[in-house]
Image (cartoon, rainbow, N blue to C red):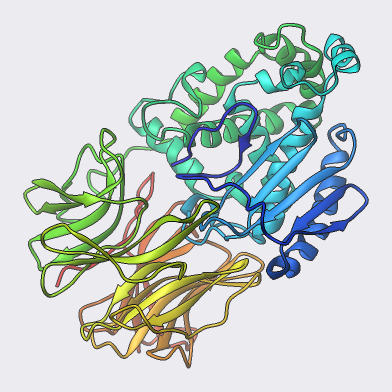
Length: 534
């Protein structure tokens, strides 16, 4: 799910599309000891927090790596309804981060503070890529900051991204090394005895998990080296790498920095990963059947009656789309999509969904659409920044609305013309994945709070009287209602991997909360997005 970026632009996060920074916007700048923070007025609250986070991250990284030369430009953009970031060391040290929090990106949701995490990640790139020693430093003295004389720019993507993800977790206490999804990907490859070779791990690998491999395997490998060889050895390696005359010969600086070649260390890590996998259960649940076998990405399953499902995704050889699959496994492509979204069946056979598209040469916005039975597409909103819609029986829609540096829940009229906020949202509170109860009197949703607390919450139909069903410092996700509306299915990675749970309301429990939880699965990899058939 991570797109490849050019070597000159090292991206932190997945990007299905990219928007240019709007040059005609009104930009303002904050100056700190090491940064110029550039922002538009609606993002001033985020910019001021980013200024603090950036200086904290700078101090943390400077305690382990050599600081970059000169100030760093940090641009905060709200031009794309995506969660992303990028960094480049030339012609000056520059970082761009998108203000949109990663509430729908499962690998990125384990974060205590999105601003701190993405800045730490991107600033690691600056510390790493700006460093030049030996003949490289001499060349820069003569030719300046020319793009081809930064030695660490020649590093493979697994190393560049692995270092950044390693430090994002080391210094924030959350992030992707501390989270569950990267380890889930590695365990899945170990279960299949298909851990890739180090040379096959890149942003452009043509097999699952595609570009995510550079982030997942790279970060776990760097973390392994730091744990087994000592965290100070990361600094030693970067210094050796920055002076290497032939930058492609990475085993030489690896031996000098870590005391072992990358080739040997990778074999040791791969073998330890395979040994850590116990015997696999025959099936995750009683009555388990696999309906798709070549699905590379499958998301947001929704029942069509009780004989078929519709979902977003791609089998790998087609563009992003929506598919229908019956219980015999027969799959049909229903339509093309620009991005993932729940597909809500309407009484006439249409589908309600959200997707991103350009609204100007500089802005990408997410809006609601309806695809008719004839596969024609009709746009309900324009520039409304709506995602994750769910439709009630009478046509009322609940959705997530992106706001500057935050998300909130809104009610949307069936024609898309009236949008009414029903929750707050901002830097310290994010909302996602709303689902109507079958009776339509309540809404289940996920609320993220600063500090990395994720709650499964039930609200009334107007957003009032919120009740926390379960919460904690883990990723709770994708709630769906039981048939009687007296319980919720959801996933949680509190055990270290995403498993399925059932929460029953009104059941006696020792804590007196009126909610009793049942863990439904225990698999080596992970399970997501449970939904009961009618």
